[in-house]
Length: 425
Image 1 (spheres, rainbow, N blue to C red):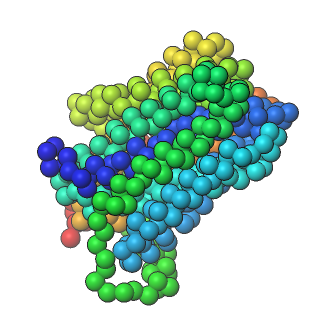
Image 2: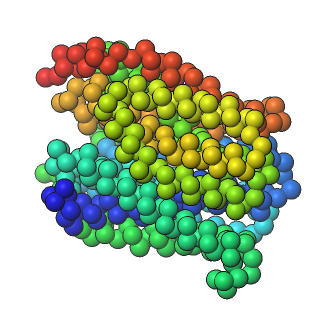
């Protein structure tokens, strides 16, 4: 731990503190609330849900397509930090731009939101890749955990502060809640920009030994994607796990980005919805540690299956939910399993892949994670429009958990590990 408490690691981890403000306050919090009540006022609940779902899916699709190519260029040119800066500035500027969007300007708000989310998701690609510059391989897990912990804390602190502005706008010299929410977008942009400075200044980046032709690099990136996919298909349990992961993590991510929209459709107040988000945020970090201990005791696969079972029950519960007290209780339950699913999925995957090809395989794993932001929100939006029911829309997410859990149950971890060892060079 003493080795990790140095300027490089802390500066790198502080970026999680920086951009988690967007994930918490914008992506999961104020944007879906404000979009439904202010920017798309007059539209039906199912129509605004459909638009928000497509916006989230579109941003996820853009990054899933761009990430492999941009990642290859960044690796070849030693310019990860430049790409990190570009995507950070994109996210920051689009988030700040939301401050100037007037009531009823739904398409403008959605356009800025999509570009801001592309900035957020894209920045994570290059932020993650910089871990190799700040820690030794044996310390990757702890360095990564430090980033996650600072992200939970930083996102929660900023969100709590902006929530206070919306609850008591007069105390901050603001005219009403709408002015407070708009100011919150500026606060997120400033927070993200200021706390991104340490990683830019203090994290070193190795330059390549020789200059490379970037056209050849781009073509090579697509060939590498094809070759990696072929290799993964030969490793049966890796392929099966990735299919399962794509489905159930899509369900997790969909609940994150659509929960507030659903609560608003049920008529819960802004204060109720924001309080629920804060509950989930501050429960998430200690619960993730507890779930990690559970995984160590009963196995990562079994612990993930328990979490998936909890999520299935949550979606069924959400269909029947009527009261704010139930919404708060659901926030607690989600907070208990959300971080555990993410962390244990990564550790289980690491057991199934050849150790000497970990970078190659984790690159594909991260791309699958980006694609996991596409199907779920679109499913919720389409289900809502087709049925005219927000309750049936949220229930549709259970399909992802059931399918993902079924596939994960069929993954033989011991056999998969044996095959992975046999394929190592």
